[in-house]
Image (cartoon, rainbow, N blue to C red; front, side, top):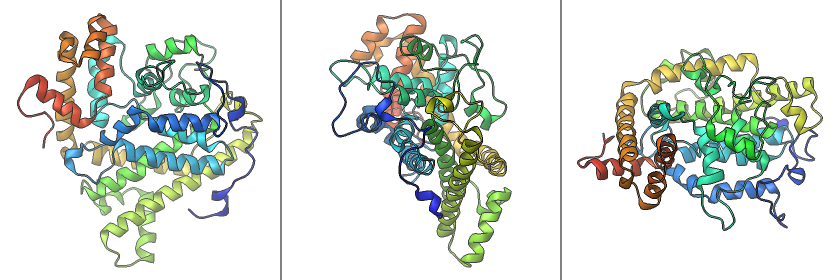
Length: 417
């Protein structure tokens, strides 16, 4: 990354989150003599079981399609790196931004978007499934490691960021159950309202997360980093898998301009190096634009505290209008040419089939699950049992899910190419 503004360090801005003044944890703990509260959060996330499982969860491809494509873990590491870069330039807490980035995908199912769609369909009669709400369940309930409590007992600021990094969940000055459009659905077309997750609502009643406000600058940086990272690595993976060509993606004006620069500066460069040059320049351009645009928004709004950021009328971390348009163009291209490519859809259908078969089998016969999960499910009925089954399935890696299909139904595991 070029430009002196990329390496800004020094005192945090007035609008940054202050680890020394955190709103605290659900279960109070003595401060660490060597780490800030947000550093402790980051470390707890890195060492948790769900984080390790990300190594074997698909981003777009299932692992059986190759070893060089992104997994949820490699994606998460890339998001963390970009989030820190944004936070550093905006003079806010890098550790909080990284903690939110590292936790943002902990609630994802096996098989990437395909798996989430299948589990959403299974859970539709029982209140639905959302990976952000599932991430909150992971870090507040499902990680059972510590002697005094379930979950990781993260700070309020990190939990807020996990839940609200994409924006407020309920409308201000309205019925708290009135949902906002789900922003991550914009890639697939018009966003639609989703009901507030039952678990988020229940946790908020115990440990209020201010669901009608924006999250901190740090969480907003993590959200923007997520978009930048997945655009970059999906271009990379799609080109390397030959789902589309350089000429195909050059139909998007921004990519065409970058490729012209690469080819003018390095005529005759072999294709793998062209791809790398393209991806690194795309990421750099989006990061630098996000820093500049965010600095302009911050200067205009002039927040004097982290709470001023939360109470603002707009997201303060984002892209300039031209780059936001470029981002939309790339997402539209990827949706049509990668996520809906026949090779990917074929794998996705087998992945959906795996989860669509496992869920009703475990719901009707909980004893098919491991003993600790079976005991929880047998004690519940209806939606409560469905949540236990969803927790079990969402925590699976791709390979484990395929092996469960084979174990439960016999024969070859679904999803094999």
